[in-house]
Every structure is written in C-alpha cells, then in structure tokens.
Image 1 (cartoon, rainbow, N blue to C red):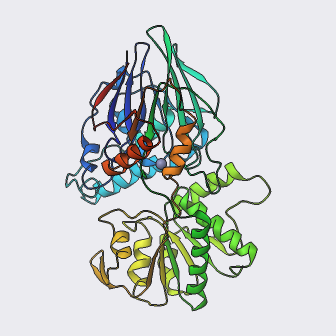
Image 2 (image 1 turned 90 degrees about the vertical axis):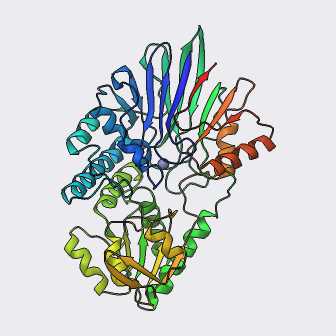
Amino acid sequence: MISIEFFGAAKTVTGSHYLVKTDVGNFVVDCGMFQGEDVEHYNLEPIEYNPADINFALLTHAHIDHSGMMPKLVKAGYQGKIYATNNTIQISTELLLDSAKLQENAFQRGESYGKYTGIRAIVYNTKDAMQTIAQFSAISYDDEFEPVPGIKVTYIQAGHILGAASLIIKVQDEGKEKTIIFSGDIGRVQSAIIPTFDQNLKLEPEYVIMESLYGGEIHIDRIESANKLITLIKETTDKGGNAFIPCFAVQRAQEVLNDIKKAKIGGALSDDLPVWLDSPLAQRVTNIYSQALQHSEESPFDFPNLIYVKKYKQSLQLTKKSGQVILAGSGMADGGRIMDHLATGLENQKNSVIFVGFQAKGTLGRELVEGASEVIIGTKKVRVNARIHHLEGFSAHGDTNDYVKWLQRFLSPNLKNIYLVHAEPDRAEALKLHLENMGINNCIIPDLKETVTLS
Ligand SMILES: [Zn+2]
C-alpha cells in the first residue's frame, strides 16, 4: 500500500511537504517553509511523524517554501540523506544559512518568529542548517537511482529555477511497479536563462502530484515584459532619476541582469549606465548561476558598469547619487536593503520603482502597486511621489497553458489520479475545471494534512 500525507502546500501555496509511506520504505518530498499571515504559525508546530521512520528525503528545488524546514526535520532527528541536484544544493546552502541567520538576528533583537506569529522562537539555528547541508547528496538529472531497494527515483528538468526538478518515483507495491510523479514547481515553456522541461518526454504514471499556482491564468509575454522594463529604466535614468528594482535573490535578479546585459549589448541602454546589485545573497546566487550557465568566456550576468555593493555603509550612500539602477532585496519590499532606498527614494518624483514579481498581501510592495500615496517605512512616514510600476510577465512559474503542456506528457489510461497542490483553493479549482473541459476528469484537490491512499 502507498499513502501520501499532505503536510503543506495543500489548498495553500507554501510549505510544500509530503510524506510518502510504502511497504518498501518511507520518504518525504520537500520540507518547506510556510509563508504568509494565515499559515506561518505551522512552522512552529512539531513535525507530526517520527523523522527516524523516514528512509530518505527528496528536495525538488531550492526555494525556501520547498527547502526551508529541512533543518527542522534534521533537528527533530532525521539523519538520512537529502537528495537534490548539485545546483539546488548550492543555492539551498545559501538560502538555509540566510534563513537561520535571520531567525537568530530577530531572536537576539527580542523580536518574535516571522511576521505574524507573535511568538519569540528559533525554529533552527546556523548549526542546524550546517548539519542539514552536510546531509545533502547530489544527483544528476535523468540518472535513475535507488535510495532503498524497491524505490527508484529520477530527477528530471522542471525549468522554474536553476537546479529545479520534477521527480519520477517508481515504487514496488503489491507485486507491481507503480509510478508517481511529483511536479515540484513547474517552469514556463517560454523560459529565460535556464532550459525548460522536456516537452518530448512520454511516461505513463499511475499518479501525478502537480503544482497549480496559476491555474486558470495566462501570463503576460516574457519578452514584452523585458522590453517594458528596459524602456522604464531608460525613461527614468535619462531624466536623472533612479530606477529601483526590488528583486528576489534567486532567478529574478539573474533574469533582470541578463535583460539589462542584452539591452546594453543591443544599444537600448548605455554602457555608462551604472547598475548596482545591492544584495549580498543575490550576488552569491548570481555567482552560482554564472558558473552553471557560462558556456563561453563571458558570464550571462556581467556587463560594463555592473557593481556589486558589498558593505551596508556603501548601500546607504547610493541614493545620494542619481541616474542609476539599483537592484536590491527583498522582492516584495518587506525587508532587506530596498527598504532604505525606498525610505529616501520614494519622495523624489524623478525616481521609479519597478516591481518584477508577485506582491503578497501585507507587504509594502503590495501597498505601493495598489497606489498608496503615503506609506510607513520603519517609523518614518514617506510620501510616494516616485512612479510605481508592476511588470507581471516575469513569473518563474508556468501558467495554465504551461501546466497542460507539462501534464500532457503523462496522460495515458494508466493514470488514476492527479492531485492538485501548491495553490490557493480557487486557483486549484480553476485548473481542475480547465482539465475537466479537456476531458481529464481524475483531479483531486487534497486538504492540508489529508492522507490519501494510492490504490
Ligand atoms: Zn519554486
């Protein structure tokens, strides 16, 4: 018998964490952090099973909502291997150490865990993160391996971010081999900088567990969005303003750097235009991307007048200058160095703030894209005179069309159920309806903490 318990990312987006029990061994797929007001408190709850009963752990990709609670699992007693691609291990190493440090710093300052819990706690510290990193075990795409006899696993390209994978898992069950596919996060066919999933692949699994974040939605064209970004940068800096781009450290920062590089090569932006990457984490992740994607002498993310800002002191001096581009974290302007830039930069009507990602409720980014005329940053009231732009075509997640292309490779009479996860309920329902209109009627939207038996 095979069962799956959905400990996260079921009828919610974050906290990916699935426990799979079989007659030949037990394992988890992802152990991610819950993010957002309604779910953040789950991070503080104890693991609901005995980690010692787990034979191995599989990590689909480095994003913190998939990897961010692996140290909690390790701290609770999990001593086995955590399999992931080499690039996922490299990026996770940065993100987990960063996450531990943020918790330690907040605790030292007397603050509570996260943004909404109101409880002073550390879920894991740097030592726990280091121990987790020591348990990582690297695998290559398309190489089948057998973590325990009777379970075979293959990581395949998912697109999305560097190192991200979907998992093909073959389990011996009641004398028969059954195939389960976990999508992880699904990238776009129109992928920037990294390869997308292999559209020619054909498999006949019995079960699919798939992301449905953008169910029912179609993304704005990626190239159109890049062109708009460059136009906004040029308009702003030509008139002596600063263009602030709040940026996620993984994938988005690298995509924006690559777009700017192409614009500089093509002449749409001047080589003289200074571009500051003001995020130590994004700098380290960019170096990982450079090493992985560098096919020639030149990095896809390097160009004239790109400057890495190292020291916080140097960061604080930046807004005294004008006619420049500043990329800084966080992507939703709810922390990080971008806050200092916005605290001084928002009042100047020559400046622009260009958001290139999703802005969650309760973040400064969301307030700004919704047109706030005044915001509070720290204790300071700031008038919003700068122009605010929101470019929505940069998502690293697929849309409905991408999901269909991803799934079509696995449709056969063998397919018993498709479990839709990693989405708000209305998005999962929208994808279910879309698939039903195509004659695919075996979709299930599991509840958080629900256990299903695959029979
Ligand atoms: Zn992701």
